[in-house]
Image (cartoon, helix red, strand yellow):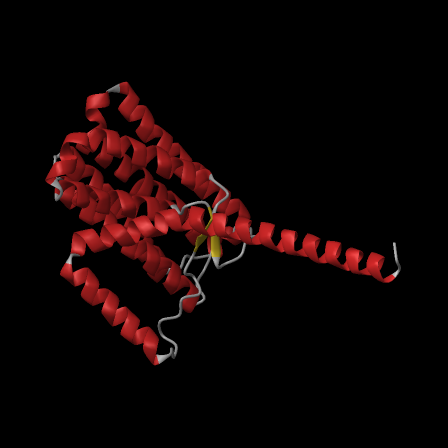
Length: 266
């Protein structure tokens, strides 16, 4: 009798092509950015990181719209993000600006990379327990996009090039801290561009494109910087609101107590 060949259940499982293809394109963008940075083509490397972030957004959107999300895709996406938005921007920013600092420079870059890795690991563990509207900590693609646009911005501002290493070092440490912080950032996962929206939304989007087209580098830098600082600003706003509510509640209870004492002659 012929023995039945045992088949592993995992062997019969496949992978979804389209979202993982976008993830592969994102990974290639990060790899190309590393090569371009080593060759001294810093602007090409920055553009590659921006293109990589576009593919990274497409793979998530595609998986959600086509219901092709999978555990494999999530793990592959995290590995791709670490290369494209962790290692690639780290090498780029070191060769572009931080190399004069020597060991202190590459340790700052290592801190950025390890904070990005920790941020991705925490996201994978908590992704089923946190709100889809918010991220805990600055997303690593957001940090990488800021670095890429930051390079263009500094290079187009001649007055800042003299202080470029110091400014870059401060930016790297700030981004590293924000990635591992518990500060909430908007995720834009629920942003549905293919559904009907009010007319004013279309006008606002067109206006935004016009503004960016007028001063591309400056406007993109301001938008990316606004997202980076939006987390701390929103957190401070929520803390203030919480204290105001607590104060008003306490004040109301005191006033009720005083009114009661007055009525009862106490």
